[in-house]
Amino acid sequence: MTGFSFDRWAVDAPLTGAAVDRSGRYAAFSGGDGAVRIAALSAAASRLPVWRLTRGAVLTLAADCEEAAFLCGTDDGAVFRVHAEDGPRELAVLARAWPDQLVTHPCGVRVIADGPVVRLLDGEGRPSGALGPHPSTVAGLAFDDAGRRLAVAHYNGVTIWQLDGGPRLAHRLFHRGSHLKLCWRRDGRYVVTATQEKTVHAWDLRIGDNASLGQCINKVRALGWSADGRWLLASGNDTVSAWPFADGADDGELGDANLPASAPQMLGRFSEEFISQVSPHPGLPLAAAGYNDGGLELVSLAARGARHPLTGMLANPVAAMTWSPGGDHLIGGDQDRQLFVCRFDSEWLAGLAGVA
Picture 1 (tube, rainbow, N blue to C red):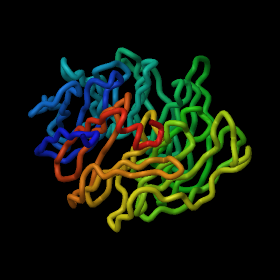
Picture 2: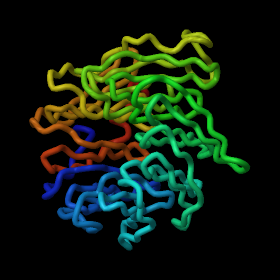
Picture 3: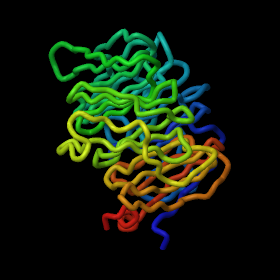
Picture 4: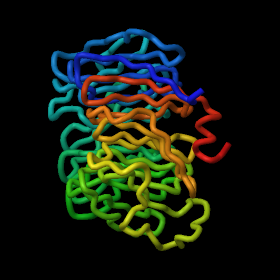
């Protein structure tokens, strides 16, 4: 037994996003043909149900607040909630911009970028407020783990909004340049952005420090934290870039006032075509790496980490990739319109991660 198996589908549209619902039962793939395709993860299927939302493209896709549902935005300004079994329902239409940035939280909040403003929708999909305007068009959104704070990336930094009752207060984190993709460590200590200038920038909210973590070769299209919060992982180089961070409960060897050095550790195989996607496992010290040459592999974050190829070099860049909440499925696809669900044996994964 190899420890994993693939379900694959060929579709007639480029992949624009991939997500797994909060129950871990359904995967969704959004496409440039204006459709969302659904895969039930309980068993393999030869064909995927298709929900068509627009004549244009679905720009972005995320798991919705509720189980078995997804939130997505289309290039005609509409925001849809797509239930895996019941289909789509339009929630809003934006007048200002395309809804190409959106996030949700299990507490029942949906957040959508509308140009320089952030729109909030409640659990029923009704408008419940707005944040901003920000210094530029919103380029990234992320909730903290509790859903009490929202980080918004824009030109010259990040704005953090306090959402847990009372007045919605904003705290600005300044760093010159255009900040794009954004992620927040689970304990709420660090906020990290990828910039237009191909750098990664980090803020330590506990002590008020911030630093550039160095230059990447390509634009960083994927950022993520290891399950234990010790590693920040990024695409954009010829191997997976990994920066060690303070533990969170115990600052360990890094001390209380130090962000990582600018040079990351490099994990995984070397590729002249570079890393296009990286996705940390939700529970194990392990990450999936997708390459611009179509390769896909698992990389252990252990001290003497192993790596295991899942696919060979297929010449088509991996376009999107994410884990199921339980970490037993990896879903994604490449730019040649091939979608996949990779199913894993949990004991095999733990052995590769070095924790079995």
